Amino acid sequence: MRIGFAGFLHESHSFAPRPTGWAEFLHPGGLPELVRGEAMRQRLRGTSTCAGAAMDEAAAHDCVPLAWCFANPAGPVTREAFERITAIICAALSDAMPLDAVFLDLHGAMVSDDFPDAEGEVIRRVRAILGRDVPIAVTLDPHANMTRAMCALADVVVPYRTYPHVDMRAVGARALRLLVRRAERGCPWAMAFRELDVLLPITSQCTMVEPMAGVMAARERLSDGVVELAYCFGFPYADFPGCGQAIACWAETEGEAQQAVDALAGEVAARETAFTGGVLAAEEAVAQALARAGAGRPVVIADTQDNPGGGGHGDTTGLLAELLRQGAQGVALAPMNDAESAAACHAAGEGATVTLDLGGKSDGAPLRVTGVVERLGDGRFTLEGPMGAGNPADLGPSALLRVGGVRVVVVSRKMQAHDQAIFRMLGVEPADQRILALKSSVHFRAHFQPIASAVIVAASPGPVVADPATLPFTKLREGLRLRPGSNERFTPAG
Image (cartoon, rainbow, N blue to C red; front, side, top):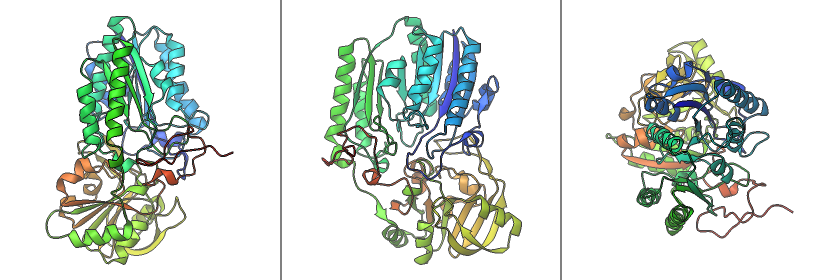
């Protein structure tokens, strides 16, 4: 079987301070850069990507790599970047024809300047080239705003089952098997689709703990007898009508598909009020961390609102300022995304004392600090943790800066702190710290929770707000509820 493979991944925050342009796909930080053609096979081999795993799974078939790219979450994708990348994929697809099937590795929460349902548009263009009879399988991040258009245009959609996302390779392999099965079958499965009517905060979507752990256990149980039961939690920072939770099912009959969708929707609804709370103001979070920190395992503070994995720039300084104000000792913080400060540290050299306006490049609120440059590095390393093992990272010139009792990992490109290697690249052993301050919302739990004595989620300044209902939405679908357990519904202005 001759199968084409492509990928275009971005999670777009409509209110993030910086757009995502062409350059961000060329230098993404924690995953490979834009890659085309046969080089894609080698570049993705062994990485924690759906496309990489799917090509490994398809070894018995004729694999045709087209193009693949990723950029870190940020503001919407620019018109230039979207059109250039989509054109690259479509041109490669046209040149590769005829194909028996196509595998698309997508995120599902991409918004572009022109297309709020950007993945729906990518799939539409691919479908226009293929025609109706060639099957398409799509993998999605569970933070996808999965739309009816995506599901109608594809033959099956397979989201990851975990958050933190530790099953990307397993999902890629599964989607490939379903794609082959669909191609051999020769006709489509029945599909049912349903949008749920409430936004879920990112911080309560972790599948390692309740209530989402219970929902996903129910999803597994309800999957018996159907082809695929897809549940996406939604990315609640995208301002368009398709934002929010959605469930889709592919089965032999429409009745079977609809029954599974309705049953899973009921499982989510039964747990709705549990999807709230658990976030502390920075002052209280630091005070609790200091009270709990001892000689044993570190206390982890998650700086959720500046999460680079949700659209933050990774450079706000509210949590750092609070740690310094309360005199915290034995702290390591990562990452502080500030290329100017990293360059200043490299210019000064190891052992030098420097005064910097650290961070704050995205929000205009840097923190004046004086510290010692303890170590310098090039920012290149390989991820080690369960979410990204084998993925290459290149965060550019980096420095370990000691400010009082806090050591700050300063980098030149952003990446979420979901892997202990981000500290080890500069000689810091995470398990030896009293407190770890991480710019992340949930992904950190996969690699850091096993070494932590406690986990505290803090809300300091940043665009990835813990309560999405506070955002100035204008384009959501009318009637969507903005908070679990609340009847507050979105109403368009005017």
